[in-house]
Image (cartoon, rainbow, N blue to C red; front, side):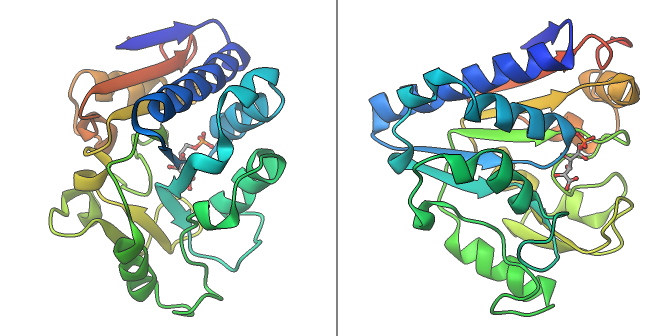
Length: 232
Ligand SMILES: O=C(O)[C@H](O)[C@@H](O)[C@H](O)[C@H](O)COP(=O)(O)O
């Protein structure tokens, strides 16, 4: 399904509300809920919309697990880390037990600057299937840190991989792979702005971009603003 909103603000506001309802529903059905977070501009808007919404109390935040789809492999607290962004825009304001926040390792973690060991550590900790995977979409059609033409896109035997030579800085990253992303109940691809129009059009016509290959087990949702949908 795809939904096109007039503006990025409306997209962020509705996605935040949708996320609260989906997590509350998951808790009603299964007792707990899990979400995989992403980085990027529209994600930051979504996180602060959720943080500031009174309905956020519909979710029992003590029973939500937070994971990440990808991370920039930098020191803890680096402003460029997706974790730092999500904590500042959302998690720091919610009553989430620290052990439910499953950040990807940083370069000052137990594996130091070794992204392969850090990826293996995250793989060992992963507990899916996830209820919702949030994914921003890059202008080149990347999702998480799966970049077009890079070998990580075709990995089938690992759930988490190191990424080197990322075309988007910083060059070293950690990413979930397609087999684990596609095992989630719902995958939501969220994109705003004219810069995303070509990538969105390619993905939705089964073009050669990583975004075309990610699907949820139960539902795949494209949440777009009018500019990102302008080439559909
Ligand atoms: O580390 C990152 O940058 C990401 O997790 C990445 O996959 C991001 O979600 C997209 O590149 C969209 O980012 P923007 O919304 O900022 O364009």
